[in-house]
Structure formats: structure tokens, C-alpha cells
Image (cartoon, rainbow, N blue to C red; front, side, top):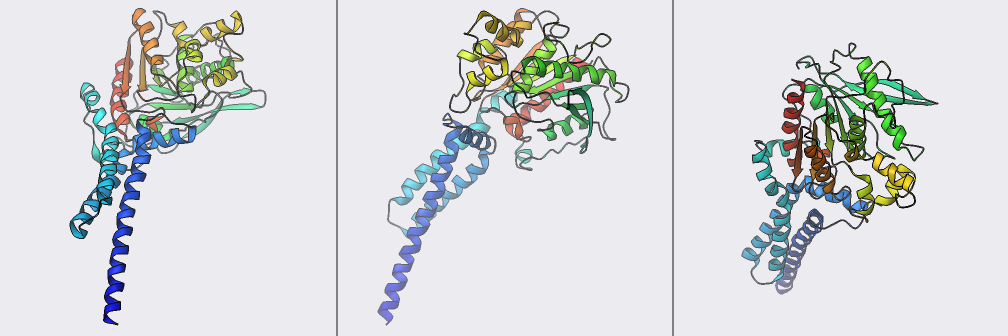
Length: 410
């Protein structure tokens, strides 16, 4: 009986040891499978969403990999023989190295921008929006235009009582490939800007029926007109209005700002008495040259660029001269002039939806026209990186945005 008990304990011990080895190995494999999408192009839009998440929260995976590595080493120390622990450690080390790419890659960019990256802020909350000057946690919704049976609305975030109202405002245009998305999809950024003294107007525009390139642009211009007409109501200056957009919304923000007063792209409300001009534009990962974009795809497994552009504009630029001219007219790069408002262009180097050349091509045009502009490339960042309000990219962008806006408000 004693011998059976000893054998049973021996078998149980070895079984537990094997299970622990495999559990640690699986942990490290899962960590590697997750972080590999930081550097490997995604094969689908679902995996692309995962790549955004793991890029922004990679240090959580670093912690898992460290746990797996440490556990495998301890298993070797306490349980001796076997090679499984070596495989586990190797896989864990590879996962750890990749997971450290996002924070390590932005160090030089942060130094250039005089930004001190904060681990405390990074780990504060997954979508925290702390602001030392206070948060405006509520908004009021208004209708700024009615088209047929459709009400176009905007959400207004006003500076809280403990913030200094600068008289400046920011009109925010959401993304979504021109056929999706919704206003106030990044509310933490709106609250933060309000906490810094800016009145924020987060707007709708028509998503359908497509092609909607003229109606969407006209809706953005109409929102600018509405904000100017109601400036006294919100204690803002008509001379301190900036447009801010993300992705397709950034394209519309740039196009509306750059084509102010252009009769080919009119506002969808009368502008005879009110100018469409804005003081500045901030663009997050915008497509800026639609003709170039049609033939120069980003990651075709994530987004069908030609189909998306074709739906937005009504066809292919190769089917006729008229369609080619339409693509040019709808491209911000075609509207740059000496009167173009100051522009801040932000892009992620790993963007799989909108290639970084879009930022470069527009920046070249702005430079040639001697327009005040700044570019900010976040080395590790994917399209939509700023969804993580406390991420490395967001920590760099926030002070750059404030500096840009305040310089233009003076």
C-alpha cells in the first residue's frame, strides 16, 4: 500500500509539472500570437482591430510574457530536467521584445516634442480621461441643419467652471470611411479639450445615400456657419474656430477648410452673410490625395480602398475624365494655396488603412505654398491609435495639439 501511495504521488507530481510547463508555454504562445500583429500586416479587418489594441496596450502583454518566462525558469530550477522550459522561454522572450517596440520606438519622438512619457498615465485606466484642469463630462445636443427628413446634430462640450474659457472652439468631424461612424465617438478627447478651455462641437454629416462627397463636405461647412452664427451663445470668437477630424472625417475637415468659399463645393446652408473660413485644421491620419490613393492601396485585406473611394465619389477615376477631375476636386492636396489655414498633420507609421504618404504629399504642397504647418509621425502607431487616450501616441499628440491651437489663437 505504501508503495502504491508513493507511485501515485510520483505520477501526480509529474503530471502537475507537465501541466504547469504546458500552461506557461501556452501563455507565452498566446502572447506571441497577439503581439506579432504589431509588426505583421493584418489578414482581415478583425485582426486589424486586434493589432490596434495590442499596439496600444502592449505592456499588458509584456507583463504576461514576463510571467511566462519567469515561471518557466522557476520550473527548471525546482523541477530539473526537460527541454520544454527552454522553448517556453524563447517564445516568451520574442513576445516580450515585440511588445516593447511601441514604447521604445516613441522615445526619440517624445524627446523631439519635449514630452515626458508617463507610465502612470499609461496604466491609469484603459480609457481614462483625467485632466488636471477639470473634465466637462456632459454635453448638449443641437440641430444645426435639417435636410429633408434628416436632422443633422452636433454635441456641444463647454469648458467646466474651473477652466478658463479661451473663446476658442474646435469642430470635430468623425471618421468611418465616409459611410459609417457617429459623432462623439471619441468623447474623452472632447472632454479633455473642454477642460483646456475650448468649446467643442462634435458634428454629424450625411453618410448616405452615396456618393456623398459633396453633401458630406457641405454639411461640415454648414456646421462651421452654424457655430459662427451662434458664437455669442457659447461665448466664443468667430476668429478662433478650428476643425479637427479623424480618418474620413479628417479628409472632410481638410477639404472643407481648404475649399472655403469655393462654389464647386458649397455649404448646404446659405453663407451669404457668414464666412466658411476657419482659423486652423488638425488632421488625424487623413486620406489627402484620393486620386493617388485609388491606385496605391494600403492593406487590401483590411479595407477595399478602391471600392470605398468609388462609393464615396460615384465611380472609378479611370472610367472618364469627369471622374478623374472629381477625384482631384475632392482631394485636399488640390486646394492648397497661400490662403490655406495652418494645419497640423498626425499619422501613425504602421497605418494599414491610410498610407503615410498622404501626410507627406499634403505637407509638400503646404511647404510649396508657404503655409504654416506641422507634421507628427507616431512611429509604432496604427490607424485609430488615439482611441487609447493615455497611450504613448496620445501622450505625445496632446501637448502638440495644445501648442498648435494656442499659437493659432494668439
